[in-house]
Image 1 (cartoon, rainbow, N blue to C red):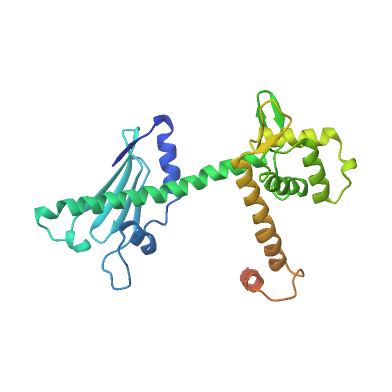
Image 2: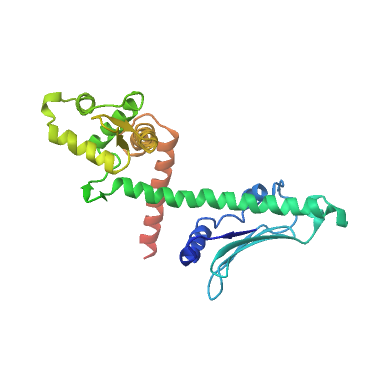
Length: 280
């Protein structure tokens, strides 16, 4: 299976990033997903991954019994994925010629599953870039706006407002944003100036979170805006705040699994430090 890259100049960099994100592909739990074969302690063979990068064309090798998937950057222009089955009995298939279509199907599916795993991992790389873009300043058509910084109280209120405005079929206006931000921040709407609301609208628009409806003074929350708002608000409300309360000392008297785990880590680190100090 060969996938030709539309930008060959960045092909090797892309492939090396994919390799870096998939160093655990040789683990039995990953191998059995790729080949759709159950693996237990009695399964013969070594389940491993081998990566060659130095002085050669980068290549990735995943092993299952006598079968190997080899993936490499071909001629600096394409990503080549090959599955070699050296023993058909590894998949419960005989060696007669009429079994060839079954073996081809097994190899094709293994290639597809490997590529799907790598696609998911590479999407995480892209998501990291998107996260940094949202948190950092942006410039479009000569206009600049600051980032939508995660966990900033004012930005957190903006995210909550976007979730609410997504339900409005005709969009929202400047006054709607002003009133809701005031309520979420515990302020009087009169204390929020028109310039401050215009700044927030421009920041959301330049980041692609809202769009202005043609020939109106109304705005529409984009699909990206809704999903970013849902993710950031829930990550902050349901994970960050309660997680920190459970993990940090003196913030939670009731023992929880997370607090006990951090207490064990702290005790182990303290013991290690003391041991090193005595040894020195």
